[in-house]
Every structure is written in C-alpha cells, then in structure tokens.
Amino acid sequence: MVDLKELQKEVYQNKVNKGFNVTDAKEEFLYIYGEVGEAYEAWLKKKPDLGEELADVAIYLLGISEILGIDLEKEIIHKIHKNEKREYKIVDGIGIRTKECEE
Image 1 (tube, helix red, strand yellow):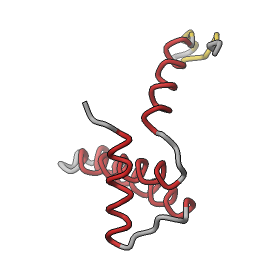
Image 2 (image 1 turned 120 degrees about the vertical axis):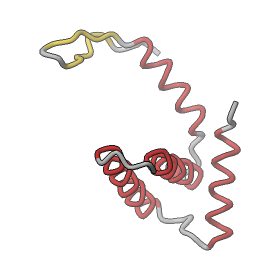
Image 3 (image 1 turned 90 degrees about the horizontal axis):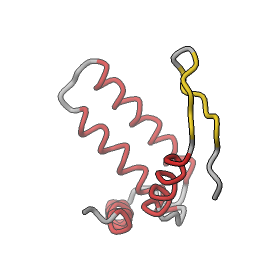
Image 4 (image 1 turned 120 degrees about the horizontal axis):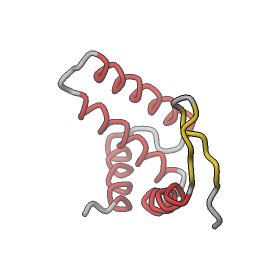
C-alpha cells in the first residue's frame, strides 16, 4: 500500500531540491487547475498521456497538502467514510443528497 504521508514529503523535498515554489499556496492552486485542464484535454482527445496528466494533478495536490500542513491521507480516509454514510436519491438523473452523516 502507498503511504501518502511519505509521498507528500517526497514531493515537497523534490520541490525544494529543484528550487520550485514551496511557500505560495495560491500559485500551487493555479498549477493544479492547469494540470486538471491538461488531464481533461488528454481524456477528451484520447491522448495516451492521460495517466501521466492525472499523476501531475496528484503530485501538485500532495505538494500543496504538505506546504499547508494537511495530512491528505487522513483527510481522504475521513471523507470516504463521511461519503459512505450520506444518502442520495436520483432526481432527473442527478444525485440529490437526502441525508447528511452524523459525525
């Protein structure tokens, strides 16, 4: 199993080693936005580098999580469990939340 905490640290250290941004969260959010756009374009045009573009999105997300001091692994696990407890009904093809989980 992959240790996201360790990956966060590796991504951050690579940024430091290469002299990339490790202080401006706004800049990192803009980069993530750009990478999501590239991934969407790769998917839309059926390009063979879709996986690599998705990896770029994940790498920027791990990096910004480390910059901001967020344990992304913990947050993902928490959110998965939260989503499992939510209830939805489909209305006109759209999932509408009908019950929020109690934490």
